[in-house]
Image (cartoon, rainbow, N blue to C red):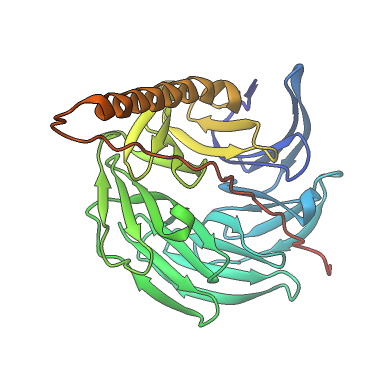
Length: 348
């Protein structure tokens, strides 16, 4: 499925329980579409959400509202049914709001162009945490709910860890010599993976954030602008060359390219609520919705064939009286990563 947005999109998000997808555009417009694999996607809403571009968008309040952030420094909540404004936080930041993510049922986090990260208590309608975590724009964030720690990446080339309980920047990595653009938490919380401008994946071990423990260079030199966690061992990457790749983590390898959005850089990737579809946006003004099973089918066949080869090698090793070396197989987990929804304006 393809949706011509007409303008450059900066962010997309899928509804938490319905076939709806939202896009924030460079014009400041917010678009909402209903998608169906058996018909052409239909636009339900077009709202002038901001006076400047709409850089960040998230469904909140069980999908009943959309939250957006903008370079006009404001955060806006829009009713999904009517398109009317529910609440407007003017001057939410001192600089352009660049990223927005959901944390708990009553909190969201925003990051701006000057490296400030804020956590908002939506019941009190106030800022409950503010972190001067970086010296440059916040490119991405991820949340570890078990430890209440917020990870941030920045154009200053560092990874930060903000402790929400202690209200402090708990750790910050050394300069990575390149802009960090995306971040995911892998291996059941033991590893953090960051995508960089140079196309290198940097792996950090949890609790050892000073310097990366591993670097994976096979996607270089194309910048890795978007990362999605498929399971604890695999991520989906969106790169500057328009390719969407399936990548294994520890062992690190490009399993295979699974889609090509266009020849233009990919801006964002997102899963649908049921994880049946993958959404991608790029500089070509097109929102593409891919059937995830179709994308991953070839890779599953490839992994199955590799496993059969490994098993065959093991059988040969058993009958070989003088083996020269041993081969080790790799078992892959298949744990999904659910994404909860928030009751952002529950008390308004």
